[in-house]
Amino acid sequence: MSGLAVDDAAWASAWRRRSPGDKLLLCLGLVVCALVLPAWPGSVLVAAVAVGLALGPARVPARTFGRAVRWPLAFLAVGALTSVVSVDGGLGWAPDAAARAGSLVGHALAGSAAVLLLATTTPMADLLPALRRLRVPAAVVEVAGVVYRLLFVLLESLSTIREAQTARMGHSTWRRSWRSSGLLAAAVLTRSWDRARRMQEGLAGRGFGSGPETGLRVLPEVLPSSRLFLACSALGLAGIVSASLAVA
Image (cartoon, rainbow, N blue to C red; front, side):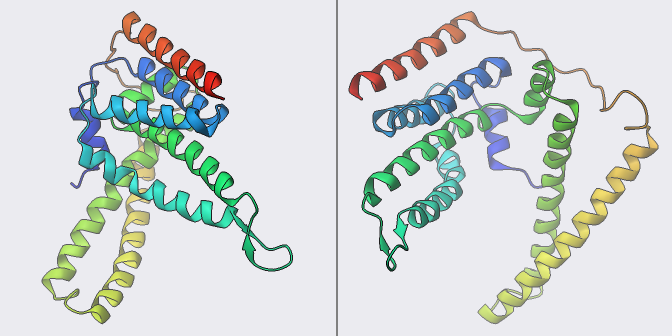
C-alpha cells in the first residue's frame, strides 16, 4: 500500500514520543500568532520558528517539508494575485498591491508552516485520540478518521492503475498521457466509491453507529506530557508576541 510522505515523516520524527496535546498547543499558539500579529515581523518569526523546529529538534527531512509546502505556496500565489487586482475604472493593480499581497502571503504562509509542523511530527493515530480527550465532537473525529483511511485507498488505486497504464505504453506520448490521465481519474473515482461503500457496509455489519455509542473504541497509546516542553513553548510564543509588538 502506498504511503503519505508527511505521515511517514510523522512516524519517524524525533518528536514522535512527545504528547500530541503538547504539540497541538504549541502549533495552535503559532497559528494564533500568525493570524493576529502583524505580518512584519510576526508572521516572519512564526514561519521561522515553525520551520526551525521542524528541521531542527523534530528532525523532519527538509525535502519532505519542502514538498509538503509546495501546494500551499501555489494556492497563496494565486490568492495574492487575485487580491491585488483592481477592477474599478478598468483592470489594474490596487494602490496598495505590494503591502496587501505581502500581508496576505505572510499570514497564510506562517499559519501553513505551523500546521505542517504538527502534521510532520504527529501521526493521525496519536492526533485523533488527543482530539477526543479535548472534547472535540465525536462525529468530527470519526469523519476525520474515515477520510484519513480513504486517502490510502485512493493512493493504492492510483498507484495500481498507473502502473498498469505504464506497462501498456499509456504514457508514451502526450496524447496518450492525456487520455490515460482521464481514464485514471475515472477509474480511481469509481474504485474509491466502491471501496468506501464496502467499508460502510462492513462497519454497519459490526454495529457501528447503530447504538448510543458512536465510534470504534480502541486503546490508544498514552504519551506523557512534558512540563519543560510546555514551558519552552509558552516562552517562545511570548517572545514572538513581544518582539512583534516591540517592532510594530
